[in-house]
Image (tube, rainbow, N blue to C red; front, side, top):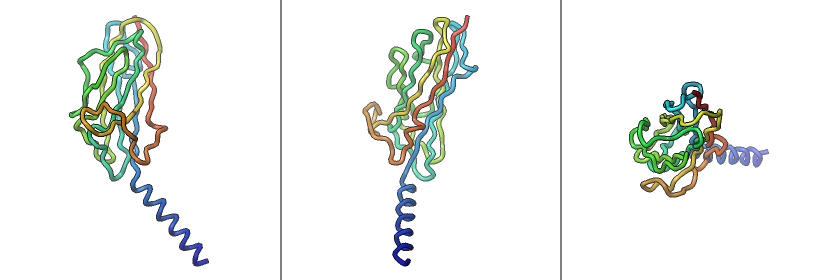
Length: 167
């Protein structure tokens, strides 16, 4: 019985220690205005990055969110976005936008909201807009591939919304 209690205590200690060193980052995406934009009009695509860790910050240059827009019906202009301080656009090519958290180390239990301007260019949709959270190696400019933080839940590293362009 004594060995069983010691073993149980060891298992609980190991589980608690591994949980205390884990960090989860999640992404949520939403097209404002119920996902509708007029042709030649502009709407914001809202991306929220959440650091759900109770103890650890997300390092600068660690996050590399990528958003894929339906390029046949919308365009992402070079300007008009509302990025958190320190964030930057790494690339904007053919409907695929890649961002970096740059110099912004996100503290524990905090989030960042990003507003991406999207212009309607052809009537169509609803079409999917997909936001994926990938990671960098933590070295400026944040474009190199890197590993996810230990304990990251890969199931919440993607989010989907829709957009529809009307007359």
